[in-house]
Structure formats: structure tokens, C-alpha cells
Length: 180
Image (tube, rainbow, N blue to C red):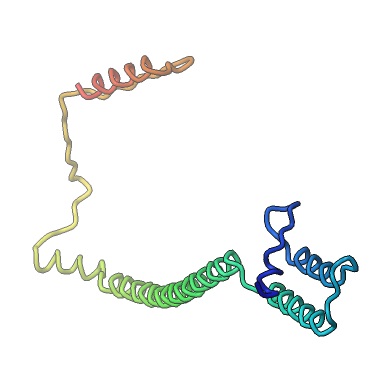
């Protein structure tokens, strides 16, 4: 078993998984333990280099799954924000164009109303009715009498008004009496 595998086989029993610091500390203690059998300086140097290599590999910055997913989520949100901004700008442009069109049409409507009012000349209508249609203005003595069989009547209610269903019923009865 080489030094890398041995360094990774140490466990920190106080936690669920070995930590990098605990693995490096254990390998360092093993290398410099005075009770251990003597190791040559060359072997000690080789083991120390392997320990440093393991530490460098384990402590190298890595990308966690959550960081990658978070970055992707933020990127997707940014794409949606950019698309929403584009849609907003298009809508704002369309709104400005429609407001310009509305003001042009309002002006056109005003011009047409003025032309319509100028086109109707009461004197011209009176001349046409008198000359072309043979009509005349009514005389002061002309009175038209319209007689009806029903008499008009009104009711004066004094006091507090009836409320609710009874008041509505009374209202309906007064309407039917009025139109009889």
C-alpha cells in the first residue's frame, strides 16, 4: 500500500468522515513518532512529500454540487431577467407608438367634428325645407292638444320611508297604480 492510500485510510472517529486536517496530522505524527522504528532520512522525506501532495490535492479548491446548481440557477434567472427586460422594452415601445397614434386619431376626430359642425348650417336647412319641401314656420295660433284617458296623479309620502321587502312591494304597487 503506497503513502497516498495509507494517508486516505485514516479515520477521525469523532466525526462521520475523516477530515483533511486529521489525515495530515495523523500522517505527520506517524512520520515523526520517536517510538516508531527508525526510518531513513530519504524515506522520511519521501513520506513527507506524499503527505504534502495529499494535502495539496485534498485542500485544492473544488466545486461543490450545490455551488454548481446555484450558479446554474442564477444564470437561468439572469436569462429570464434579460428576456423580461427585452419584453418590457418592446411593450414600452408599442405603448409609445399607440399613444402617438391615439393623439393623431384624437386630432383627426376633432377636425372631423369641426367639419361636421360647419357642414350643418341651420339657415341652409331652413331654406331647403321652405323652398324644396314646401314647409313653413308654425303660426302662433297653432296648438295641438293630446288627450289621454288616464289621469295623472302623484302621492306624497310623509314620515319615515318603508324599508326592505315591504318598501319594495309598496313601490311596485305605486308603479302599477300609476300606469293603470
